[in-house]
Image 1 (cartoon, rainbow, N blue to C red):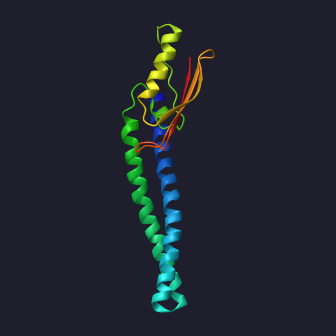
Image 2 (cartoon, rainbow, N blue to C red):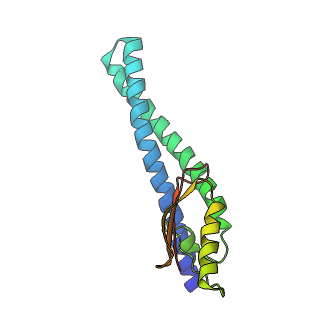
Image 3 (cartoon, rainbow, N blue to C red):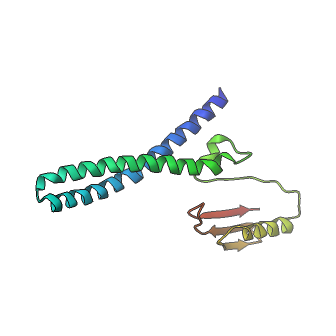
Length: 155
């Protein structure tokens, strides 16, 4: 029963992602495309009645665009997410990702390893470095695979 709940929750999150991407891409694109087609139809034919045809063409174009974008973007997002090991399906789709690690090393060594790990992330800049409190915060810039991340360590 518990595994079934995780699967259903994962499917619900995927469906919500499909829906959100569809709505956020189809509506603005359809409105802009509809207005452009409406103006072009009126300019081409000279009849105000052709506005409706242009708006309808834009809405249809927006729906098609939204379907293509939601399928493509969820597929591209799902590839790296499905490869995450040691994380249940619900956590994979969460916006805020958290991991807990236990290292059997001295405090200073762990802190240094955390700082070194940030060097392996492209466009990463340390924003907060408080060794005494055991807190590190960094921000990774926009890359092809992410819109940027905030990375925090609490040691």
